[in-house]
Structure formats: C-alpha cells, structure tokens
Length: 81
Image (cartoon, rainbow, N blue to C red):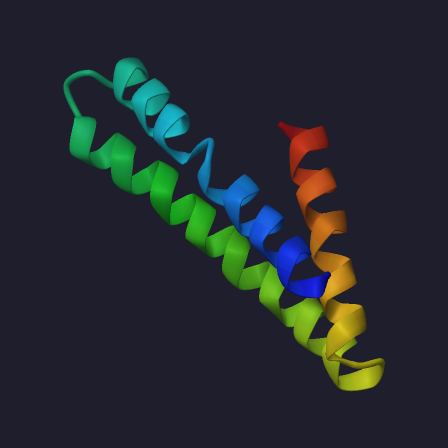
C-alpha cells in the first residue's frame, strides 16, 4: 500500500507541471525560456525542501511512516494551489 501511495503522490506532483509551465509562458510571452525555468526551478526547490522533513520522519519514526507523510504534502499542495 505504501508503494501505491508513493505512486499517487508522484503522479499528483507531475500532473500540473505542464499546465503551470504553459501558464507562465503565456504570462511572459517574450521570455518563454525564463518563465519555464522559473516555474520548473521553483517546483524543484520546493521538492528539495520537502525532502528534509520527510527524511527526519524516516530517521525518527521509520520509513513506512515517512511514506504516510507524503499524502499530507500532496493535500497541502492541492490546498495551496
């Protein structure tokens, strides 16, 4: 079940990426490359910052519990978006 949860979180992480890049390119039509790199880079920075708390949970409580934290991040991202 943990693998399925991880797959759902991964899918939820990458589904809106194309839409957000397209929206950013429409907002900055003269600088499409910059808009794309800003959008994708921002996503990777947020992903990098989320790995630190997940690693801390995995070290303290266990890896299986850390997998249960991932849907919380997905729900938080959906709520913020």
